[in-house]
Image (cartoon, rainbow, N blue to C red):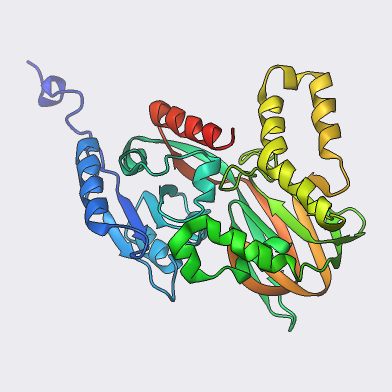
Length: 360
């Protein structure tokens, strides 16, 4: 005679599969909430996830406090719906938590989304990625900045941080113009910033080596290198290679800036494509790309820890957001320290083609 345990199904005592939970941290100025909620509800139900949690940012808090609340509520995936500031604020909290960051690009730059690349201007594909996408480990930048009075602050960054002309340009961008024309507002700001683009002196140390003294107009530490409008600042930068790519801009006069603009808007994209091609993997190809990078207006270096101290305070920016003047900063890379939800194969292919078209 069979005992109950012998006749019971093998999975009788198995626990039911626990539903996963997503949270959306959204900037109400950047999203159409009704459309976003209905799109999320559709894909969440189709994927069999629990009801999504919603957290609204504020002027005082761009997303960090909301991301903490999402994690405390048990979210497995925290999606940032807003601009680069919202993404960075959420990522700083998700980093090291065991949860995953997802992107619902809704800003002017959408820099991280462009570099992964993730769907942009396709709400359905972006939302589908939350519930049907794949997890990818990317590098995370850890920053310590020092103010003129000696105060120090900790920040994280995903794309790039820098000093000089780019930071002054961001600080000079008119918010009302940015709302009207998007990234084109930076052109107006660039023209105004060039008028006072005095070079600055600084000392830096890379990966613990001896100090180097440099005079430059801009210094940028990047985790990835593509910007909006088809510009490529750092052609060798990869979001998951475990190192920073650093560029020092030191043009001489107007034509030096013209040379830098040509590199960013055209030549760097060609170099990046060439380096990724089969021909570019050869020794000859590597010599060509290395030689092309070594020219006077631009100097490229790479490393895992970068420390810089200025002779006088200057504007600093983090992922496209001006944060005021600093006198020193330290950047360290946490290789593979952030998990990001990326699109499935079909959506990823479409996103890649869009980025390639933008940079062609």
